[in-house]
Image (cartoon, rainbow, N blue to C red; front, top):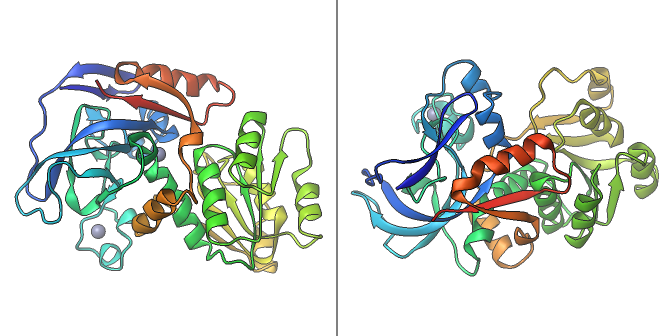
Length: 344
Ligand SMILES: [Zn+2]
Ligand SMILES: [Zn+2]
């Protein structure tokens, strides 16, 4: 079969590899659609910690956002059969440690991550995937379902932030995760949502997807806009999805006293924001890794149209041209939210 594999730093090859056999506990899936993620770019450029520390092995087939159709079921698999439409989550823990046994397999120190860490991903015609982290879907197109993984990350952030109708929620960043987190906040009942971005296209998209306010962080003062929208109180919840120091600092400034800040990004250096502010204003600041334990609700919210992934798709490419998607990210082509690729 054809696959897109990383052989080393910035060494990506579209090549022929053997079609995998489903092992015990695995299903073999014919991949129908894939999302290209910022994380793919960061793996490709070896910016991901696992690659810098040598914990990750190459070659590896990239891609952790995908959907397809089950074609074969391995030994000991229950609940799946050929023809099932499926998508899957990324991380799988050791299932033995304290974190795994308390439901936090997404941060197990011995985990694998599909398409990222020591397990082949879905930039290929077929993927063998653990049934335990494979999920069936219905009433969604392959493209829509391929973006269930980032949608689950948005839902997980909303869950971690315990969003209810009492909350005004700001999402900083208009990329795929930001757009999906804004919709998740809305689905959880947030009374007001605001999304910030520097891209007019992404702000327009946020409005289409139900944000009450879309604030241009390049031209407008985010703090002033936030205070205006919340009558001077600040936001109960801020989901930070820019990964920038200014985004982190904005989050601190616009969160109300005793508010919650979900970090959906990684930062290349320690944010220099006012740490004392976290203490004196009793802010809850927490990180979010992936989207564990929220897949049933995510797929149902997508099926009902409460979370829409199709409007995020900016461009479609064949699998052989994944490299172009990564180049577009590197150049920072304006307005690109999500590029979807299709295997042959
Ligand atoms: Zn992703
Ligand atoms: Zn574990």
